[in-house]
Image (cartoon, rainbow, N blue to C red; front, side, top):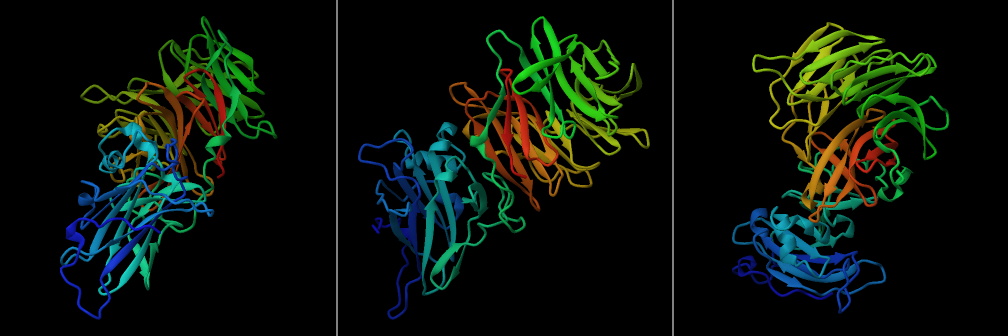
Length: 522
């Protein structure tokens, strides 16, 4: 294997005593990205850069050396080169960063800028960033393998963590290597990951976790014809039909608005609506279906058999059924309304001396209905009491209640999680793909079957203004979330999401009015 040129002088020890092995580490750098031909092709390795210093911050300031060398191997793991590093003065550790540029229009220095959260975010998918923290052993020569993994292209981990892939899923793990004799390796690539591009440290449990999202398995369920109805919202019920979930959607073809079944790619109208829908929920009750639709001009609550309709005449947003399917809740401004049959039975106003919160999203767990937006508010259906917390630093656009105290809320590009006491856990969890464009999340849902999983969906807008569908599945660890992400070419931004109870299937509609299904092994 080819050796690189020397690094900066500070890495070279002042003297090495005779008859003693040197204190050093050899970085063995490889890649599973195809080696670029003489005339470079995008998607192959174009340039590799390396830096080493006593601290992580120092490694991102400038590269010590770069190379375009890459020797193909039949194994698919190709050789880039070796580099020997030494401790600086009395330092016992070295922080190492290796970057790979996968496009002739991107340099290794451009990729290094991304590592320090600078530079052009559009370059993220064309860069691989690998980090290592090496603890030197006095008078021993260590060997540290570093793989530039193609699956880690676009994954930006925090200082002290590095991207690895296990069973096709990427995650950020502690970048410190453990050594047995001369051989060193990361010791946490099989579990304890912080998430692909997440912000926490490696502190989770063992095991490889759930199967990776299969982003290539996207299935189009409905695509509007020219001038045809465009979908706005989606909801489903499991077990109503034995072979598949029942899917209800709302559709508009101005001036006509309707609730529909989505059956085999065909819209089957079930009820006309007064205006465009902004929220939908459906539940099964006594062998029939109950629907609530929040519309621009009001709310309609009706039964598939008896067609009981409640029209409020007031604009509402978002709706949610209670456990029985006979009562629904809707929100408008600072108010939460409880609907049953043909009238409101309860109306709760979350007013404050300052005026009141702005609410836009609902979720329910057991005997609590949560409403969120500028604040987090809830109504206790057992005690019939109401509560509203302090204003959120950044508003939530949607919420999912995992329990009566634990919530998952989303902003445009971040996820917040509360603990069982209702307090936020740490800072925002900023999703990795936020570095690759403008991320606009719209929906969060969850599955509590077996172990909790969080699902978020929205759109990712690139530098040219094109928006692509985005979904991510989060697995909560001890103090962080392990994220798996899918950017779904061919589908535009997601505006509504429904998942099966075990989290094995995701159904969503886009801002182009189409519906899709994405399998997600639980």
